[in-house]
Length: 603
Ligand code: FUL
Figure 1 (tube, rainbow, N blue to C red):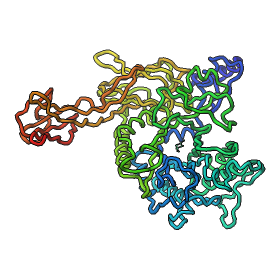
Figure 2 (figure 1 turned 180 degrees about the vertical axis):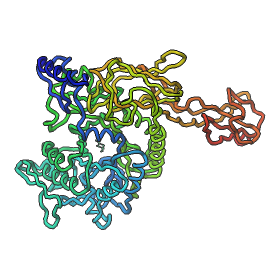
Figure 3 (figure 1 turned 30 degrees about the vertical axis):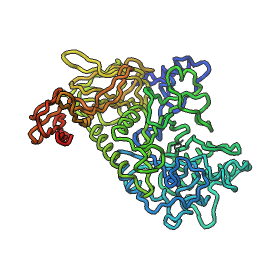
Figure 4 (figure 1 turned 60 degrees about the vertical axis):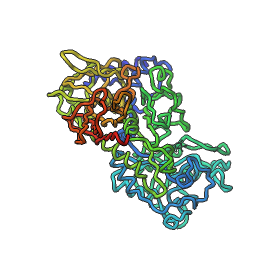
């Protein structure tokens, strides 16, 4: 191995980019005599495939859970539901897509079949689905409608097809775990009167359930436009008959029929390990494996607190690029239940998850469950509209646009990059800029993810001041910090697996929300005005610091019934009584809040 590396070093050292000494690959095998140093070098050359990279670039995508559970108010059905419980009358997939598009999402993944086995499309291979409901007299097809809306709004489409299938488990003629023979079967199975336009066929040695599953994949991948992601859930409410899944056959079919699709739950994309929107402080996408992930039928659990640190990859037999998807729901639960009881996340909350996940080397997959009217509820729409606005206002404006520094990092093109040869970069702006966010991206397509520790400083009063201490970066890191003003910034790479390459650094300003205020009478005939401050935890040095999301505001008030302005009295500690009406307003830069009124007579 050492000799091999040496030769490669010689070959590659003739090239200009000395940071590359091995060919880049999606998976590297570790040899018996590879030292830890060799492993680090290999890890530094593991890169995403074209499809994985496209999926990373989606950044923010949607999940739709819709089916009998929407009507029975269950999270998991039991497979024995009468299809008639799916009492859908109206369906507005355009409304879904318009909302998702405005929120900044790039793809939607829908539960074509959840664990209950009910199918949302006109499958040739079962009657347990939309064809047995009253929706459009049994002729409706939700996947078709969604696919059309996706085309109209420019969204990609992904499908969730649950391997667990309670209908096929519970039904007397069910195919799941029926101990049927493994024999060669042609996919798709021809059904009289319902020919396929796509004439491709496959032959796989599989049992009844795998044949059923492959036939359904064939329908979904050939009759609903391009499919960009296939989502395989690892959850199983129940199993039967030792049913095995011939994933390698499924993969062959997917790769052939949907060559641009990534596969979730298998080798392309892994689950982040929780369903509540939590993110790892350090999320590496170079994942260690003991067996070749490209040949694996069953994939390992990805819930460990850490997956790709040096210690973990030193025990690997294979190193593989496998990005994380952070999935959670906008509502309490994956399916819609009720508007009044089921809690909906606030925009602050979803925006915080967005920044942690998209800005934490993963993709944000947010579930929005349509209601029984076939629409997103207005509360969900309001949160998503506001979220999209915040994302656009914060991240569409790059305050480093005309900055001076490494050109290939500051340009708009992520294909161009700079190798950080002397461990630091300086970026200067003509005038001072006010910022509280930075985004940094490594050139993972060419140089993998390599940075392990870095710090950001800014120039103030003739000295460099520490602003942010970070660990790994990868596809994208969003750094959040209290707002500062400067015209000079330094990024110092303190530890890295090999020479890193950076393709983008941007500066942003998140225009934080004005705090709401509360006006209360206290003892001694005094009134106080208290802001209800929103906070998030910031860990620049590893320790928890509670950061105020609403900095530098002022509260101004009047007691003569006039509207408070920027010149009205500034609230400090308290106000002595002696007025009828107190009117207060919050001011932050050139913004102001609504007027809060405190009427002594009514208090
Ligand atoms: C889980 C499933 O059991 C839930 O119902 C939901 O589909 C979620 C996305 O994955 O494993």
